[in-house]
Image (cartoon, rainbow, N blue to C red; front, side, top):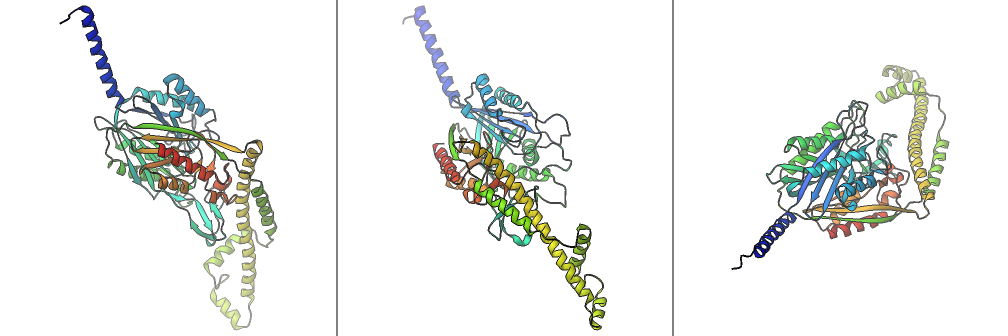
Length: 504
């Protein structure tokens, strides 16, 4: 046996190398994760519940993937977050942590919270805090169900057009309404447990505008903020719940326009959180380590609104011309309406007066009622016309706004980022617009994977993204007016989403 110092040294080196390679292979076979959140409430003004930026960092030994959720209206373009936010955050994470920019998904909940100016710096801070907490995790995914907290805000009218439920204008009369659109009750769920069985983080995906507010009017993360609190408070110590907004472009909180009770997001958030918890507790986690992202650009056609603007301006003039004079004003109309609705046959006095007039051959009361009813009808028609004019004016402004963007863009292209993320058997595809719910349902149905979810409002913001059919309703609803995309975009996105999902 050769016991020379050189041989012993070589043997020790081999042992060290074997240990290193063995350890590396174990680490490569582990999925690690860390999560953190940072308060992003704007200074000043009352705060009911603070908005947060939350970060989940995942590492399979080869790649790091970051999911960031922000309690804000959008990632750029509108609201407090500027267009520089996303590139600034990604570049800083690349510089400081070596995380590839294409591996960072940032989603806005679309709540209307008031957030701080330094949200980019606080976002980076949240990611760094999450990185400091990295540990091996077990992964599980599943679905929950909740259909009580939301409603489709698109109202199909008997004339073939569609209106929408907004505070910006009045609803059409009930007798003009034919039907409503669908909702998506699925809650997409990802659960990450520590090796000791406690829960480190939860990602949940749901489609609904979280814009209910709280009775005081104070700053709030709204429905999904309350839902996240319910989840975090009822799972393990330190659990972070990250909400990913789905295809909620045409989905409102239920009874959004109620005037009979204060607007309060907390009960709706509690329902959503409890439904998510119910499903989360049934998920079994395992040592699945698959972590993958696909990030691609997609060029969509930009819509030319010129023909729609011309048609709406003509409609505006026609509505104005239809207004007619009447003897009544609000002071006289209001009591008449109450009186004539309460007593259809004898509105102006007790019945015996009408019967007496009839007995002696007079019809003075009935004649007066005819005149009043005629004036009331014209006054009501003027009110309905005014309501139509407010809808036309609001949506016409949106069409003109986006027409200016079309005129300024020689290529007439909307360039977007579409990202796919796979964590175990949880698969997600993203889009930067306010996608309407039928498109999300289409993608889920077409996907080859059972657990497929869609995160709209991600990695940028391009306003509403309605279906091609909804685009034909330009000017009738906000989703169909406050949009940049042209017919044909829907198939392009759905095809790209399916391509990415197949690659995951």
